[in-house]
Image (cartoon, rainbow, N blue to C red; front, side, top):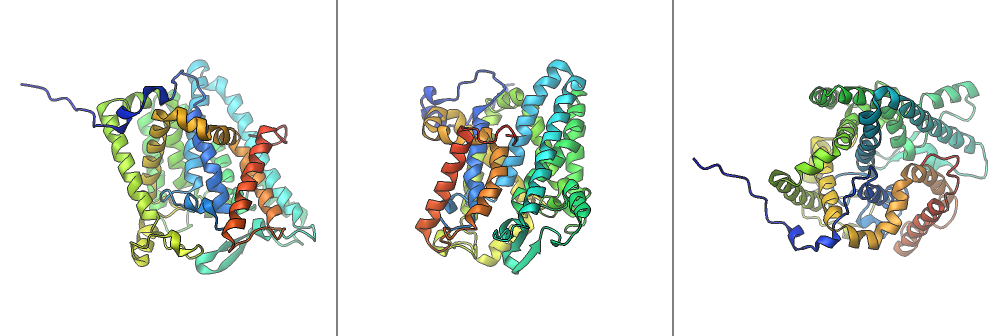
Length: 409
């Protein structure tokens, strides 16, 4: 009897010069992940500086039914799994805990500082802080107040800040990350150190399933404001899986070198292209329609979007899109690293290595730009210049390490 072996699929990588590949040195820091985190920053600016410009060709979910939040969370989980996982394996969980606790304190502190700074800015009469103190839901034409009235007593304001019950919506994903890091990370590493990976992932999926089947916004265990947009029971799924991938990075990378792994990469690329086609049919009401393919009826798209790609619950379609897009981009960076790094690494990598800093700074840049007559809104050229100028400014601030001493990065 002859045993059949699975053959790897034909790959475009075979025609790419080997000298282009990412140099695997075994170092803990993976510049491909920094590059990907840096790529998130223009998407972030496209989402929060809502001016129609060249960034819209990649922003507002134009590269798939995913947003900056999913990419940021999964990358954060992987980096945590790599960095702290190495310490857990080498020194044990008890020796790693002080570092985890200190990082938790730093993240929580910066979130509270952000909330209180914005709260204080509201009292400056010549500054219009509406853009960071309210949330406008365009589809239903409703505005939500994210801060209590100005006459609220100080003790109430501080207590809400400490519980993360208020704050600018542009920073809410960081609030979610802070809470997940504090509450979930130690438990994940405890189970990994006990080699209970299957149980860990099973619990994560059960929690996700419970939230997925629950009525909208009914399960918000932390009571924090970010849970309206990023319910922790749903979003923990990609964070936990990210940590596990980072913890077992070498084993995961080895799998993708096998025939099965190469077939999975090919399938991921094809699915990613399919999702890109889908999202380019998004009937976005607030941007020019010439950017939309209009090959899928708006009613059909909106049904698929609400049923399978809901952002707040991380619909199963959105979850699949996140996974295949990550695999595809990571594979591309692996085989084409040198030309991509030469062309864009100088810009993306510094931003990626200081992504938390950029998330903090961009809130105040948004406030500043919205208090000037600069945004053109309907002027494509002005808007593109504004986006480019802001990204250049942030890059310079990162390179000069402006306020790095006080702002975690």
